[in-house]
Length: 185
Image 1 (tube, rainbow, N blue to C red):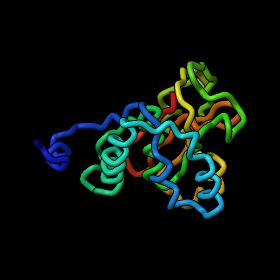
Image 2 (image 1 turned 45 degrees about the vertical axis):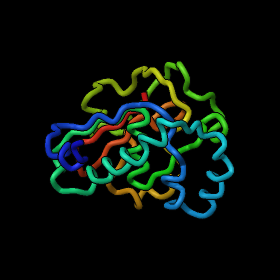
Image 3 (image 1 turned 90 degrees about the vertical axis):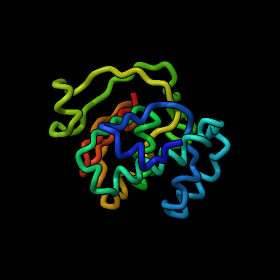
């Protein structure tokens, strides 16, 4: 069986797809005690599965290495839904365990949301000439935006570049040091 290292030497890009919830244990230790306690009180809302247990360690290691090893500075990455969420977790940005409970809006299951590009000079801005468009959603976790905004200086390698639902849901995350884009739709 090939090792991760052997696979990494052969790739030309990374696609981190959607899927199962990310275990909050991956990011709880990196947040303030108050936020940690809030997340801990909502652990029962995470829909953890065999898929979560199998993918979390692999994808966390893969995206951590992608973000930190110089050999990947030109390698493109596209994260979709869970993939964007893991991009966030790797940078230390926590997630909502459940959007409905924490934000007060319906979980984004089979929803079409208006997405607003918030940074014209971003990859999202260059991909979508318009400032807004519709995106289809199937998720209930997402970037914990108030924490991200309050601690933005702690995340110099990541920026949220599109939002929806009155700026309460992050729809895209870009890395500033790599050609990496994550989308939540």
